[in-house]
Length: 247
Image (tube, rainbow, N blue to C red; front, side, top):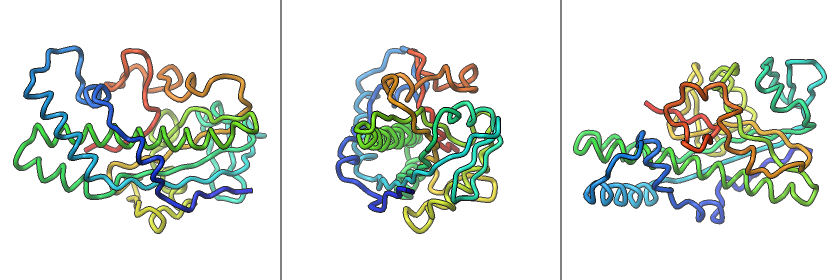
């Protein structure tokens, strides 16, 4: 049975957002340089501004999938059909998968744009704070899904988003249509697959038997075709496995 999360916001999930300063620095391409007290204080202020401005919303749904044809994944009772080696490898051992969408809302974009005219440094830092926040939202949503699956000895795979590997960014359109994301969480999309608000994520994750810790698969650069040229790659070999749209 399809399982659509209809609440669209969750205080429990939102309460977990604390915006990890180390993640903010990673998106700022920090590589161990010295940071003076003024910059540290500015980052702290930007984190506070970001947390007070974002309006996180999300939605997800699960579907049975058909992987009987090699290289192709079909989501039953939808028009989602992917001819993609990446998605096939991710989901070939799954009989069900989740699609999800999350957004921080438009106000954080307005804040970033406003600072771009008066304080470019703050604008850039707030942009990185927002990227960190949407990642944390997706992590928390996935954690919540896994709690529900654990009783069945199941877990989710890593998240995979259109725009990575061999699955084009235009595939965001079909997923958002299935989720009715414009009506449900205010997330729209252009014909080319760019999402509005900009700090938004679409992702696919399979459901498989609990054979390993989900922490081993949720964030791994080793499974990403972009690992060799990603400027945001973590020093420990992990990445967000999400597609965040940046100007």
